[in-house]
Length: 423
Image 1 (cartoon, one colour):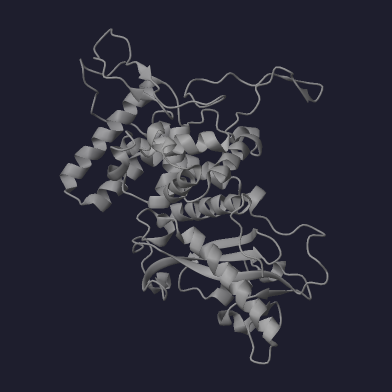
Image 2 (image 1 turned 60 degrees about the horizontal axis):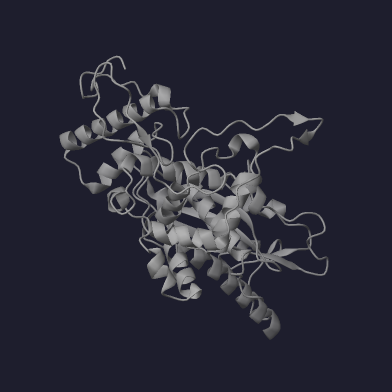
């Protein structure tokens, strides 16, 4: 406890570089230093006299350093020379398995390629329990939940978190089973996980949820990044291209393709007209999405790109150009197959895409119209998350993680009964 005076934390020269590689959840000394970080942020806010947007940015930057593990906080215990460190409490709900914020013992050794019989099984998160806890975190007590029909509680849950309780149950299960061992969350905290989902859906400022969720802004900032990045790791499992044999040889149209723009603040470090979006009439980012025609699957996502980059240019060259193309969708479409697109892709019409023509038969026109409408339905579902529908207040390097995490959540929802309509 060197460098600390009675009842206070040393305010001079705090070195944050050692926090860069830490994960959520360490010992109480790091918690104390995180609190010092919080105080530094407040002093900076007072000096600069900034508004709420800049204040949240400062908090977000300071919270990049490691903060208390999920569910961990400092009790109000006096500190002084020779006294014991502050007690650690964990009032957060804990299911079977990881989640308490305490140290989890390492897995047992593997013998002859088979896992030891005493290995800890993955935790179980039934949808009804997920629904109950998710509503409790947002103020719906068990008494209020029991007063209404289960369907009403499911509607509440979807409005709060964007997808169904069944989808979240599957998502949590896969976070504990599909990811590589080194990427799995050893100290899974359900409250902070739900806080991340709620933040994606409502996109409030940290100070707006600090009180209702009883979490300080530094922990909010670190938690949403931590769990958001972990959800994003499922991208290779959930958003993947067709495998051999999945495409019917008789089908010409295999996917629908469209670009989606997300509004951002002005890019300070790289200002210029390239960020201008004709859809939002301001700065923005563009993404390219591909949805399978014959199944409820998002099979392609590419981006982000400056919003001024044309859809067909992204389709042809990705982030490159004609001489040096980047990862692009045109190269993925097999010979003889087509992607259904709007008129913005007419430069590729007849090659790898197909737009609506006047000489198309009524059946083909109807098919293409339904495919494009179906794609817009998916776009509407991701834009139901306020973090993608409103101006993004954080650094744009953070936006890709948010976009891909939301798409993964919507993909789980598609697989849990909330399907797109058939064409």
